[in-house]
Image 1: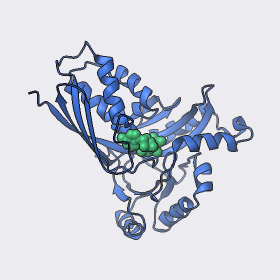
Image 2: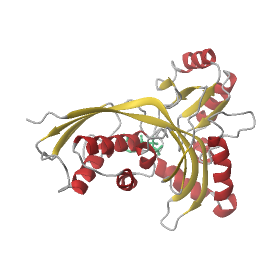
Image 3: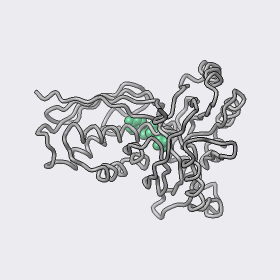
Length: 301
Ligand code: ATP
């Protein structure tokens, strides 16, 4: 019996900067966003087996069947590489342990999908190139190519698939506080479009954003007093959930250098130059918000 197996970690991300720059005819929004992986991770254990996809998931809130992005990634990989795989077996058992809050703006599902694609390519000698993997990833979600890339931080444009690696953030403890309710990414983008009477007049020009974002991400991961962290999607999510604004204020009062909502929310992150201040803020938040995590940027060391 074939017992080839692999355990991999799938990190979360935060968006240090997110501007909506346009909308494609197919409805997808164009973005300029600075993404940074952080060391809060889901865990995946994959074991080659004779046939089929056998998926199990520990942790609440995600589909336990073929709708899970892990299952969909495994299925896509097996169908794409049929006939060109080095390994005769064509089945896989996957156990997912969810640690990243779901529908939280932390990219957990996309990261799980990326980790599955990479692990399967290795386990099955699939021989897919990084570009081929990114192409498959795009079919599963706009953030998947970022998680497939080796780089711990990137400036992403297009719908998130055009990646320019930037140096990782350095010198900050990052506090993540998830208020405990899910927010649908689809709802946020749909509402963003609807609340803009003349959407184009509210969109920052793509070029301006890329230049600004490259400055931000290109400055060695340091955030200076003049560095503006913005998230255009806050207009939608904060209007519906005022608690997010209050959480940002609380983090700033505890000494965060910056506090911002990540992605489409509702998770708020605070960047702390002082670790003791971050610890104190965590201790204050944890009794009210179970999903509170003190994390570090991936690639910092
Ligand atoms: P993003 O920041 O990329 O918009 P998110 O962090 O807000 O994503 P996810 O946690 O990735 O959101 O979940 C989005 C949706 O995908 C949820 O409704 C969830 O049920 C579904 N989903 C499917 N598979 C997974 C998975 N493995 N992990 C998390 N969510 C999954």
